[in-house]
Length: 103
Image (cartoon, rainbow, N blue to C red; front, side):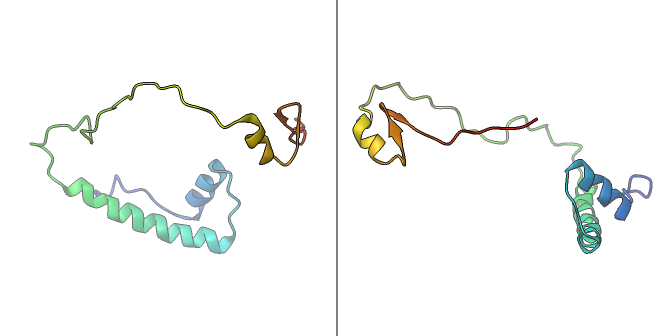
């Protein structure tokens, strides 16, 4: 990597990234991530040295194809058997605790 293209990894950058990711990092964690980010960027920078001039772009990384299967109607679990596993039920329905989210 050329000197111009290098990303300067410091505690300020790590704190900005942590803020974007909504992470609350301690000072020790911030220092650890500075070191780890530098190692990752150094490792990835090796890719910039690979000669790809005569390599065709790869649009598909896998030759796997979607193999849809035919729809089949199958027997479902009987309602009584299903409700026997529910903690609470009423009138063929599973009862769950009410969820209230304040905004």
